[in-house]
Image (cartoon, rainbow, N blue to C red; front, side, top):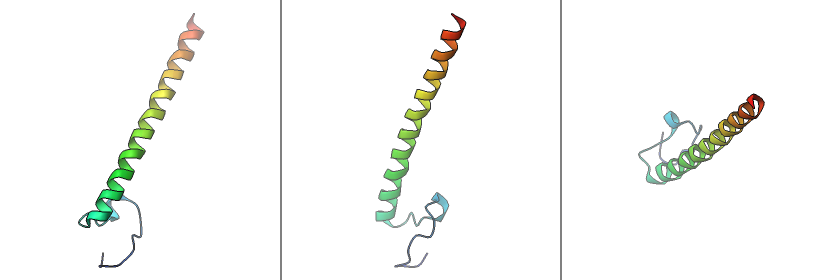
Length: 57
């Protein structure tokens, strides 16, 4: 990636991680997306477990 060139893809392998502004922005973005995704996953698993528990009883 040349200096001044825009990011063509938000995929981790396509980012210029040597540029601090890109590294900070996309690092925080991916961390937040991971936390939100983990929370949604926990909620889904808990609701499925509760549904199975109610059907057994």
